[in-house]
Image 1 (cartoon, rainbow, N blue to C red):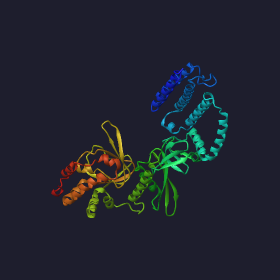
Image 2 (spheres, rainbow, N blue to C red):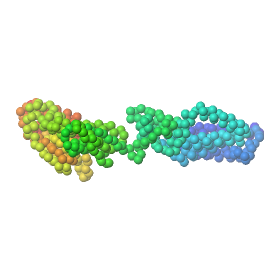
Image 3 (cartoon, rainbow, N blue to C red):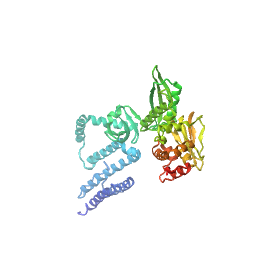
Image 4 (spheres, rainbow, N blue to C red):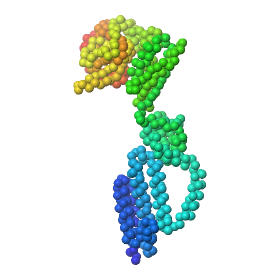
Length: 478
């Protein structure tokens, strides 16, 4: 008789060790091991004339009865765990469902509670009616004490069932916060804002607020900006300049197309409303800043504010290439400028051609593109008034690596190489200034990716050698 409790005790110890061993394993391994333990414990109980199921057979009254009861308790707990795991698998196990597991947690809690009541009533033979009555009173007291927490709980359940957003979505919760949802739990959601703050909003507030999901059906955002000017220029000209400014803003999407409309025409000011789309919310401020800066720049070059277009000398002095030249030298270069008009679609120069001139954009928007060896067309970017092209090919004799096409009507000022040659021959110091200007312009020129790809930095000095040889500079240039 002393050996009777040995097998149940050994099985109970084995079960506890196995549960500790599989705790960090995968769900499949856990389910397999727990199923084997469940069957083994059930077989052991049946072999000893009893069963863990309620209402079938009472646990035998003999020396190993305590161990059998312990095995029955473990059997019910493992069964409850298997059922709870099964609900998680059925409801989904992706990242979002793991973060927003309100419904599955409630269901698992109900399963474990049912198992505990069965254990108390059928296995341990304890009266539970009084316990249920007492628990009702306790529940009322706790409910009154935890009203806010319960409100957050049930609001979280409602939000979880409706699923207006998931972890990783960008949302706006009323006037409280906007950002990326990083966590959802029983009491609240956590949102990481654009300022890198972490906002915690209770579920009860979320349920009562207007919820805007910025990630569904797309992250694209609409925006608008008002532009006012006191210029007396025609509304048609102002609208065209604003349209060209939009073309110079890569952050603004071309589809859907931006819209420009006159909002107010007064005796002193005219106000335009510009509507556009950006790819996502963080791009909103970037696009707005780009647009306002480009509009101001194009207005200045077109003489919208001063009623006089920017003089050629001022245009040259604003270029990084000529910023070190004296005023009389700039005036001398300006006399040699040759104006050219371009219609939309006209080609300024072709890829592979060798240039003998520098081209300065006076007005209009031009696109830089390149066709690779396989015939694929790559668009590098766009340039507008106050920017220039062709200086490297002009000075070194290398073929032009890109093609430049007019997107709008515009004017280009051509500066022949001979205009620079005469200045270099007369003043050797000008060659050094041009060298420094070219190097600085390649490093700092505001041409975005187009400047970096089309004009790589000359880190080994080979460009300078070709410039010296091509222009046949005087001794002071070396």
